[in-house]
Image 1: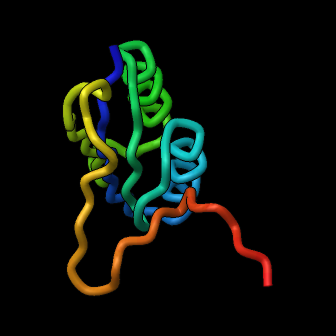
Image 2: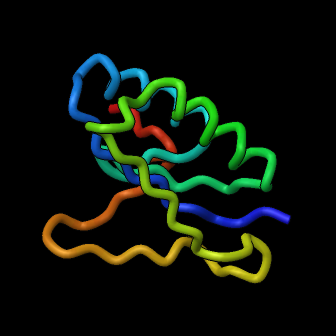
Amino acid sequence: MRNTYLVCYDICDDKRLRKVFKTMRDFGDHLQYSIFECQFTPVDLAKCRHELNEIIHHYEDQVLFVDLGPVEGRGDRVISALGKAYTSLDASCIIV
């Protein structure tokens, strides 16, 4: 069973920030600067936490995992925005 998670991070060092970003691209969809939406099994979640654990500095950085519940039974993404409208980064590419 997969659950949808928001993974949000605040990393104090640019080098670690790039490593966390690259790592997270393997696990989910990039929504905003430091926020990814991921669909994790318990094993996937443990693997992601382990990989991030090896990168971050535990006294300076923070990674939050927000469990949004089971993937099954959910509708489409429920994302609303204030300010600029939300646009999905996984939308098809338009070449002009």
